[in-house]
Amino acid sequence: MSNKYKIIVSGGGTGGHIFPAVSIANALKKRYPDSEILFVGALGRMEMERVPAAGYKIVGLPVSGFDRKNMLRNVKVLYNLLKSMIRAQQIVRSFKPDVAIGVGGYASGPLLRAAASQGVPTLIQEQNSYAGVTNKLLAKKAQKICVAYDNMDRFFPAQKIVKTGNPVRQDLFNVTAKAAEAYEFFGLKPELKTLLIIGGSLGARTINQSVIAHLETLAASNIQVIWQTGKFYIADALKAAQPYESDKLIVTDFVSRMDYAYAIADLVISRAGASSISELCLLGKPVILVPSPNVAEDHQTQNALALVKHDAAIMIKDAEAKNNLIPEAIKLIISDTELSKLSVNILKLAEKNSAERIADEVAKLFR
Image (cartoon, rainbow, N blue to C red; front, side):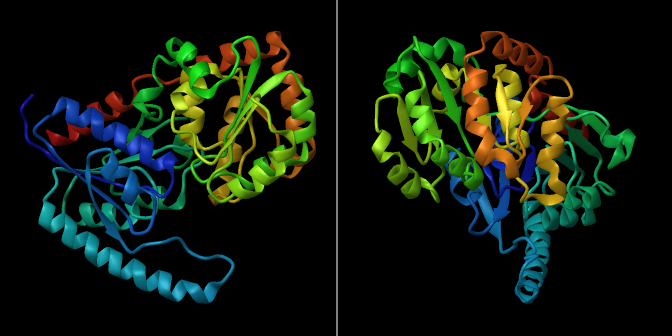
């Protein structure tokens, strides 16, 4: 089609919001090549770098989350929220979008409120099994709410809900065919089992501490490890790993080729962010989930339990990880029967073509 639509995509803060947002934009751009897509993010957050790298224009709002530990700091937060609401109104008035899409994150609140107030149709993409406060508020004016889990009518009007799943990064499709390249890329051996340890785009303190506590055990085992620490923890991780340095242990702050890492992973240790879970479902990867306790409404635990009840993942609580995580991973990775069971069950939960299905819902709002 040659329809020239104007679309705003808003949200971000973490890779879990940014990757789905870019995937939705890519699906819309493929369908409507002449359309104009503008991203609206939060100043100082990672979307301000990642979105331009994906080829899209982005403008930032001076918005941030509330500080629950130091209430005095919230005076500035409220001031910036007011500035963001005024700026969001200006952006919508100037850009004149045909539709506004919110994917979660600080910026989506002011932007979608502004769009709705100016009569622009809005669509929300809720990635988690437990809806956040912002999306619950935005749902009142939204025309469509795209979700990834069942029973979301606990939070949203049932007539607005469409189950689409969460979009994932396009480079993660067909990773199995990349296994030979992946072993060569990492310098690992196909005959050994591979444990992939990831903590989300910013890293995870508890997961890293759990690995450090059991480095001697990992080094003595007959498995190889790709350990992504995140940029805040790489120095401590490298220092701790130095006595166990070998070609079986890769320690890095960031895995540039996550498609390669997934291609050869026999078992994954991960936080329970919605995007990570969607990727693991589509790839059929056995996983041990360690939900972060530092998220709104403890939604990562709810995400993990949605898999655990189908025998599609193992969950270890954050408080128990330091003692139990690595011993459990080593026990699990050597059991082909258990790995196969988890793989089969998690694959059943995969929602395919999510970005295209969300684009279908956006297309209905154009009309």
